[in-house]
Image (cartoon, rainbow, N blue to C red; front, top):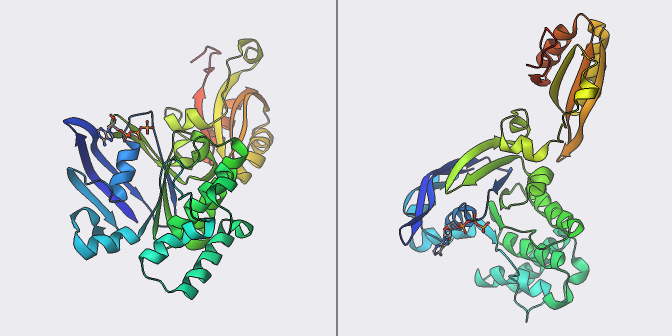
Length: 332
Ligand SMILES: Nc1ncnc2c1ncn2[C@@H]1O[C@H](COP(=O)(O)OP(=O)(O)OP(=O)(O)O)[C@@H](O)[C@H]1O
């Protein structure tokens, strides 16, 4: 568990972090997003103990790591694996040699080192590239080796700063799959800095949106998508375009968000059946957040019990966000 409390950091009097508070539960993936200059990398560098905050606390499993020094600081650093921004592998070392580096620094004997490097190459799916040099690897493969290297010393926290920038979508998928595997198979807590909401869509449980050194939104991705006013929902859910002609033929028009297989598959037909209303999808669409299907639909309803049907959808777990057409058939 990582807890960041009221963290501040300035550079030459210019504030980069301005009271950042957030937490990351063990074994989850947090995406830190926000525009350029928002303070994402500074936050990551503080958590990685590469930068000292001016004030505030960063607790990893209860211990405030900002107050440590000497051997306690070195021990805390080993708990935190870092995938730096950009190409970070040593060119003159093979893939296996790069992964072995932190193990050499920690004085792990040769045979154990080889076993561990083998396990990590397997985890990132690059066993056949053990003897390849970085220049012989693709950008995505290099990033996967950088993740393996960050995991070498068995950290409890993995920090990745823009791990997929400059990669094409397919390669991005392979790097994200490796981060997801680290969380799923090793139970590592992952903090990913990115300005790509696609990263949040694919692997993040939680998201923190930073703007001008402050957290302006933080929570579980699947909760935030239910809030129509959230940045996360507008970035991740399918858009619903206004279509007045299509909507004019309905007694009621409303937007709903449905999360999960059961809700997406069953709620709407069930509502239509229970309340004897005609219910059509007139806009929006379906997407996936991680493995979870999520829909934002604009519904058109006809029938006397349309309001009751919408109410029931809300009670049954759907999120009815706007009744665009009120009881008198007037846009609300
Ligand atoms: N070492 C430094 N020296 C001076 N200013 C810095 C330093 N590191 C960051 N800053 C400043 O702190 C602010 C936050 O920068 P930071 O790199 O954390 O933002 P970011 O959200 O990661 O941006 P990007 O997405 O562009 O990487 C910016 O104004 C930046 O110029």
